[in-house]
Image (cartoon, rainbow, N blue to C red; front, side, top):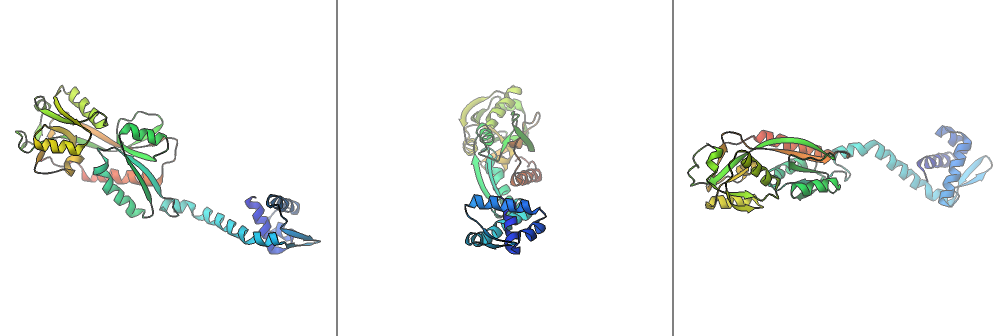
Length: 304
C-alpha cells in the first residue's frame, strides 16, 4: 500500500468515476486504474465495483475510505509540522541523553538543565555522570547524544566544541600559613602534603602534568575519586590540593581558603563532544550555548 494509491482511491471514491478521479489527480486514466488494482491486490479485497462507465464502493472500500483519509491527513500534518515540533520540542520529539564528567557535572548541570527545561518544557533528559573515557565510548556507541568533558579529546570520530576555559586554584586549610595570600608560587607547593584526585579522572592526570611541568612534585598523602572528599580532607589539615575554580566557588566555606598560582596558571578547557557523523540534536546545541554563556557570565571568582 502506497500513499499515491490512497490518494487515487479517495479521488475515485469521492467522484465515483475513474475518469474524473484521473483528471483531479493529474494522471492518465489507465495509470490510475492500474494503481487502484495494485491497492486491491495488496489488501486482498476489491474496493470498487466496476459498473460500466461508473464505479461504486464495496464494503471493503467503505471500510478503507475513512482510514485512507486519516492516513493522508497525518501525512499532511507531518509535512507541515514535524520540523517545527522538533525545533520546539513538541510531540515527544525533544529528548537528550547527556554525559558529564564528575568534576563538572555538579557545578554546571543543575543551572544549565534548569535553563534548558525552562525553554523546552516537554523535553526528556537522560543524564550519565562518568569518566571521560567512558563517556567518549558511550557517545561513539550512540548511547549518549553528547557529553561535557575537558580536553584534550583525540578521536577523529568526534567533534569537539570548546565551551570555556577554567583556572585551577589551590585549596588549603583556613589555618594554613598561606591562607591569607591571594597568590602563591609553584615552589610553595613543593614541601606541602597534597590531597589529589585519582588519575582515573582526566583532571587528576592534568594536575599531575601541571605539577611535573613546574618541577613541583609534592608528597601525595591521599588520592580520592571525589572532590567533596578533597575539600573535607583539606579542611582537616591533611594537605593542600589543586581544584577547579567552579568547585572552589561551590564549596566556599570558612574551613578552607583558596589562592591562585601567580605564574604559569593551570587552565583546563571545558568542551562538549558529539559523534562527527551524526546530526547534533537541537537540545544539545542549545545546552552548549547555555553552558558557554553561564561559564562566561560567572567568570573567575576572586580567591579568598
